[in-house]
Length: 163
Image (tube, rainbow, N blue to C red):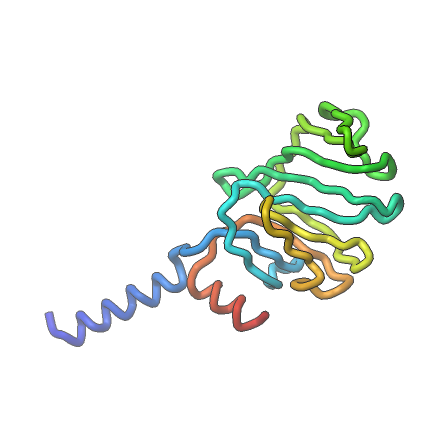
């Protein structure tokens, strides 16, 4: 084999790796069409979405387990006041001493978490230690998909260059 064939083969393998081999897993924020807003490397196996309820104006959180197939399974919701959208017929309800209510045991699996970003709602995601306010990563009044995904070097570069 000539050196030219070897070099060409190596370059093709590297290029294929850049486009095909996942190198980083994390939380990907996109619009409904899949256009990325931001990517967060994510070590935890849970993601919590928090916001201020639009009617009661109180904090609300939903925590999801990240499954092996990158789907999300409901773990718990935590809220301070009962109102629109509050689970009342599913799960196990626990009243906490700080005035919050925790609901667990709701069987819900989703491929991604979807929301419509409105600044007044103060949406955020957290890994349990760091809170990432969506206002820093998402344009106002846009649909957002929050999903766990593995990305390639090419995707990572494309996201970094577009944000």
